[in-house]
Image 1 (cartoon, rainbow, N blue to C red):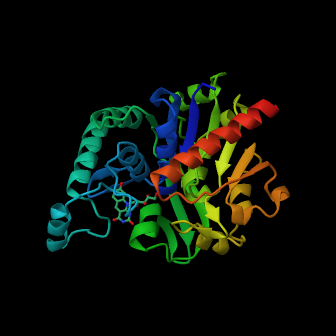
Image 2 (cartoon, rainbow, N blue to C red):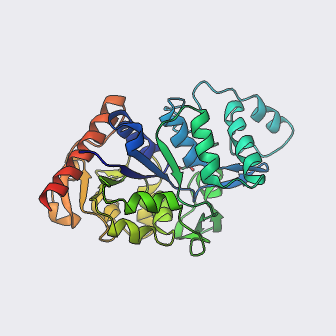
Length: 315
Ligand code: FO1
């Protein structure tokens, strides 16, 4: 089968599957849509963590053990900021810093985030298209038992410790979707929409909150296939299980995927979550979803495309 695949992704977990997809699809057939709800301004710089993680991962430059930033990074800048008594809770490596400086310079010159991202991706040698969900700022904020917190304050500064009461995707209502994403979704030759195993509340919901995005996905010609971000009630990484419990939800693959609320044609869950196929309200496929090695990332990506194809053929 040919036709483009659109993958919706946050940072770490999503980037792993995106890397797997990039290993089996020709570069022009993969479009990765990145969450920008985590973006913020820090030390006067425009930081786009999920765009960075996707760019670095797909370019083979990522610090995979850490899950963010560049491999082989040095930390001279941060050490000096710390020594001067500056804000060192959010760590910018020396080479990573260059990306934020360059992104900020171009944004301030009036270039939209999508174009800046395309330029940075090209400079890093990426063939795959990485698209921010919108050129307009949307900011994920969390109401917690310590009050409202911006995403990175909650995630990095406060180590996800505050209890979450609710989330908002600030300014989403007035944001415009990235037109290149809508064009890809409207393409009659679209092969699949893959919802990567990213956090449904923190990473995928901001993408779906962009006006027109959810509707375009629901109306697209291709099957929508999600990979569960939860294995046996636990997150591979990140605070998803903790947040779900705080929101009064049982942390399970079924509850996490139910957050997509009828958008999915198929779900891919780990064998430990395969007990009750009826629980998913969509076709259920079962396979190992833990991605540690590149072979596991590629195998899960291949399985995801197979599931999409089988849904298409069954239509
Ligand atoms: N995550 C951390 O846990 N600590 C950091 O100091 C940190 C710095 C950082 C710098 C640039 C960047 O692109 C990402 C960075 N991240 C850091 C990752 C990021 O905060 C989160 O992993 C994502 O926002 C969640 O997807």
